[in-house]
Length: 125
Figure 1 (cartoon, rainbow, N blue to C red):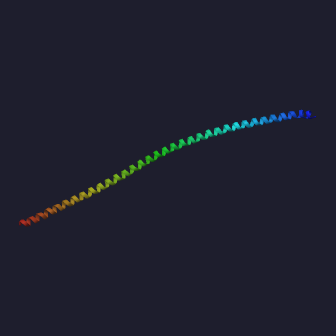
Figure 2: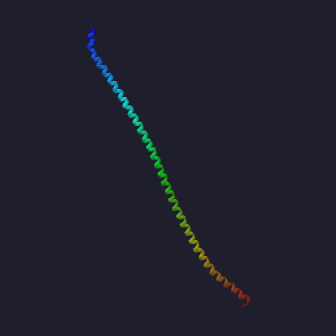
Figure 3: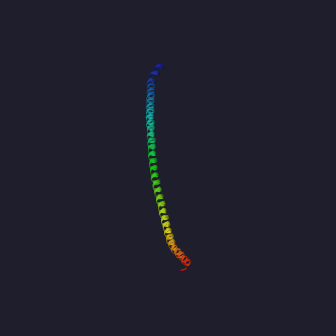
């Protein structure tokens, strides 16, 4: 009786073992697929990080160049302002000098006339 029962259960046991093997193979296949996905994700993340570093270095260089151009432009503007102020001061100084020279010329003529009057008085003319 035991043997008959065992023989009738044998296909069920075999089918159960077959299913278990199939499930284990599916699990192993899923693990292998998961490992591939993880590796692809790691490689992809390394690529993204590398690209981000490259982009940030490029952007930094662009901004440094832009800043350098702005500084040069600002410096040029300041230089132009200083030169314009210098020209204005030189023009004002020239005008004052010219005014003083004219004034000195008029005063020199008055001084000559005064000296001549004093001389004429001395000599009795």
